[in-house]
Image (tube, rainbow, N blue to C red; front, side):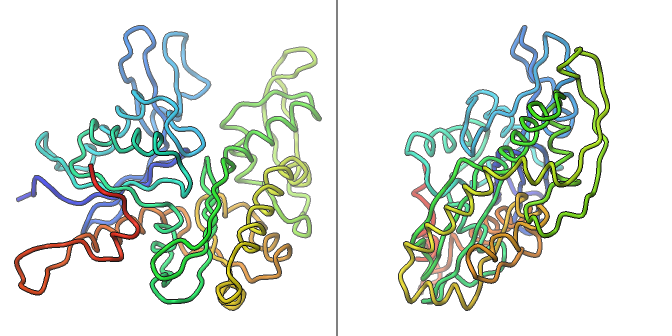
Length: 351
């Protein structure tokens, strides 16, 4: 018999949302996209179905991404999307109000934090907790952050990049950028528009990044891809072949921003912890670290070994799941439950 209350970890990302359920693992992985009928405000589609509508909808329907740069841009759409994702796992009834752990960028305002927590509650969550994304990413990557030694993680998501050095269950120093996979997509689309006079859509630029995007110049191999768009010269549809050297040139600005932020965090890290980072290396998580050559590029600029986590796309959600398992432990008398110190340091007070 299904319990009416269970634990759920949510990686509410700008590009994708992942849902983790206790004892079931990741049960949902869908784009953070909502299709809305503008005439009546009703939700037409959510997730994969909505993503397929981007750029292909009639005038009365708009497909939007309600989160931008890691925070809520459209509160109503985010609430409805969360409601769908919370209730979607098979077997959950209308009385189901899970205890939810939501991941957020390391540096957000109190207003942004409250808006996400409130949206989750309105969407059907019970007690709602917040955990910082670099902490969740480190837990999901299997890193030991409870020891008195430095561990560095760089989580490159769709809307944000979180960089943090962790020790003794806490963040020693960190930096959060509103730069991620979306900025790579925008840079590619802008480059092709300005240099090659071709206007391409959001999904096309993402496809280019995933198939021939390259961060490290030393790995350029003249891979090519044919793309379709609209000519800015005569306005007609046009096909064009682009190569990985084009994508490398296009994404230099966001790459330099991320490299600069990593160096800044390293400069602010206490010497003893910095020595630990040099010994252990830097761990990359998030979908952005799948960009070809980004690990070797960061390693060359920092002089430190860089590793990509085993399942970078799922690390944050898996880390939220691990944190959920640590929320409650039995006290000495075996009756009363209390939060473990580890979670108290990482999770904000529930609403």
